[in-house]
Length: 638
Ligand SMILES: Cc1ncc(C[n+]2csc(CCOP(=O)(O)OP(=O)(O)O)c2C)c(N)n1
Ligand SMILES: CC(=O)[C@@H](O)[C@H](O)COP(=O)(O)O
Ligand SMILES: [Mg+2]
Image 1 (cartoon, rainbow, N blue to C red):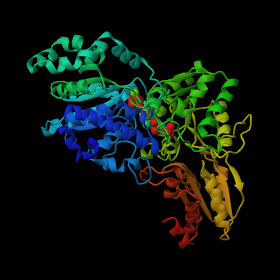
Image 2 (image 1 turned 135 degrees about the vertical axis):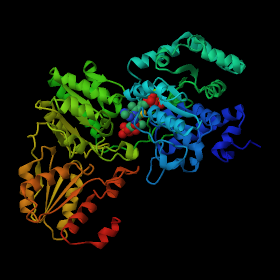
Image 3 (image 1 turned 90 degrees about the vertical axis):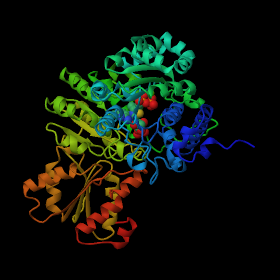
Image 4 (image 1 turned 60 degrees about the horizontal axis):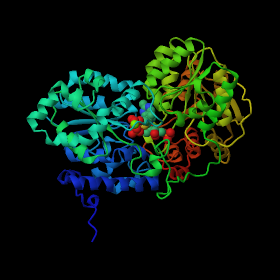
């Protein structure tokens, strides 16, 4: 009779601590199989989760979670953690409407003491928990697990710099799989590689456990405290030690016995922060992931046997594809154009740009603050930098945009991919705020593409625009499939366009809501309401002539944008109010994303939820006119 799988018999997460070492290893194997099965069915972040299976099981076995605080960095590797902490029954709802988040999330479980998804937050958060613990006179452990890629982010150094002065009792696990989304870049990556390739690591893998376990506690204490601990027993993690950490490692993160032995010892260290350098393999235990260049970092559903992903057939290129192609075209004609990514070459399409212009492509690592001011330096000296960062991740470099770019009026071009709602990654990755946070800055010029032809024109506009900083935003996913001119012409700055003439209602759309705005116009016309539809193209400067004309010649004006409150609609309201155009009783509504964080779902579901689809726009216009449509309202749960 085959033994009952341990995973099935785990009554609660705490019972992981009752397992024997061999059961713990068996449990890791089961968790790995479960993780592969789950992601094969729903897609998601597989590689990083597989790399931390042993580490996750060992951490929950050695430490008393949730009393001991376990904080994951980025959190995309949390699937084994969620399987082990009471969410196995819902794990196949990951990243879906009404399901589990793809990252750690406080509201989901006591085992998620801190939410994650933007890199390098874990050590700072862990220090906050340490300081709170110390203030309360408690003695629980606090563990931050941060990856080598995330260790390239400045925030990690701010936290490590402050660690030893904040607390004596902190455990940082550096999960070094020698991968970011792409292979890691930068000096820290090279340093870590040296530590791992050093002779001591190889020998340590052989005798690390035996030494750790056979050392009597007093001797262990003595060795640990003596200089030898960091210089001889383990290779010198000098950099971390200079910051006040005990450096332990590098150790093999897939050798469960070694891992357990070291973690049990490390758990006793309470007189100085400890950094345990764990060497893992992204994609471990699943050959298609192990052998893939990106280690199956983010995958669609796949066949477990072959590893072949089943991606839906694309009917059009993605906006990212269009961006890459168009930037390459522009760069061929202008050698001042250079491109910058913050560790996301494939996600931004700059991997394609780099194939053509390797010397004009910069991957700065997960370092958005640096990326922005690096771009400012390039622009200050006459180059045309395209700083290509997802809208949500540019939030990390906002002061640099304000202080180094806007204030100095430097012609940095910001290519904002993943603008608006992004679907499965949920609230942490939504590109909701860039219109507001960039539009608040003087000198900024901001464009939003309604489709791929518009995106091409906006890239041409940005390439030609040297009068100051510019930004153009475009969404995640497939474009519309319309034709793109071979040579896109730059747009007239601050000029929108009218696509449909009407007389009663005017819909002024910014970005890809234009398609829904045109559908809403049909729905309104079917109700006898003649509707104008215009594409603003620019969030800043707004097309004042267009806005004034729409306000003057229509009873109702609706603005709609894929952005939060305080963006385009606010700029239009601000202008109209200043012109006294609201005094005449114009019925105006500004349709934005809701003033809340929307959980993961499909992008279409999210926009419908936000009231930014055709039905939502139509109902808003009807209600602004004092009309209603109960059936329509019911249909969209309004
Ligand atoms: C501030 C920020 N920038 C970029 C990203 C996108 N991102 C998600 S995971 C990742 C790589 C993280 O590498 P590492 O920490 O080594 O984790 P691994 O995937 O190797 O487990 C990146 C760049 C992010 N989440 N946050
Ligand atoms: C974990 C993380 O932040 C990235 O992997 C992100 O999920 C990528 O998003 P896209 O899938 O939109 O490129
Ligand atoms: Mg890594």
